[in-house]
Length: 416
Image (cartoon, helix red, strand yellow):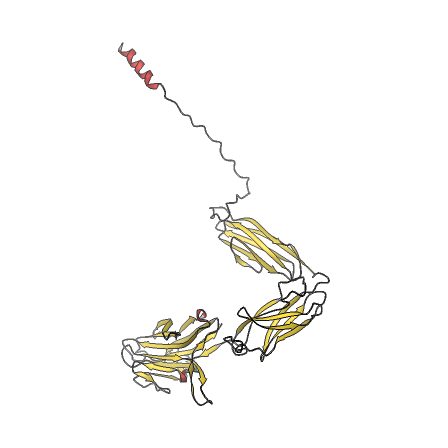
């Protein structure tokens, strides 16, 4: 009786219980051998998988000589992308317009840790369209107060006359009318009696290096086979340079002992600056040098403030004024101690500017010791282009002032 009751109890507990059986899913079908599976555009590199070139094309693939082509590309899973010739390193996705003179095969190479993938595209360049002119600005140069430019007609027929324009800093400065250019010939035009200074620009032609642009046929009077070569940008004039040795005698000199008057002598306990040839700690003889001796006290200093020279009246009264910096300037100098200056415990040399507010801004500062070598001091002034500044050279002694005979070799600001 007990056994029967237990069997009934167990049977009642099983009522409503469901056994779930999970059906197996079919295995994914592998990709065919040798066919890479492209990850989504911009996806990170997958271990063991080479980059995938989703697309690489040229539009159009056939052009006339002097026309331009647009290269476009889309790559996935690459850590480096290069396109040769002309482009070099590139992003994974991009495009670029290129003028071509000859048929060219471009090669895209996409690389990651698993290897490289390459693809080529060829652009065919034919002769210019018969009966179509093509004006190209080939050269810009300056003679006196005239900016000249040369224009060649690469097409098969004569161009029409048209307007040319001169730009400085992307601002229009002058115009010229260019006569019709015969097919296959070259003409020279000019922007006459033009002075960069008179037009309100920072630099004068022939004195400092200036970037200019000349565009021809700006009103599109001539319908050309190639409209992308009607402008040319070039640097004209000499590069800018400020030689600190040349202007040391008109600089303002100070030390902890007060104002120092040029000329000075090395034995002055207040400090001194002067010019000469020197044998430095590396055993070599240097010219175009500026010696700066700090005041003969612990942590003594000497500082020179340099500006551009000018004459106030009738050439009798001189002084200095702020320097207006052109683009792409750098400061450079070598520094070292006189040979035998073994007692020095080192100095700190600094190069800086006095900004328009009158504050000294240090652009480069470094510790220099007597180590039988000369050191290089450099500073990039590119961010100061267009500003009016004075330059500052400074030398600061350490606890011991003895033998702090610091020499600047060829200190200058120059335009790259």
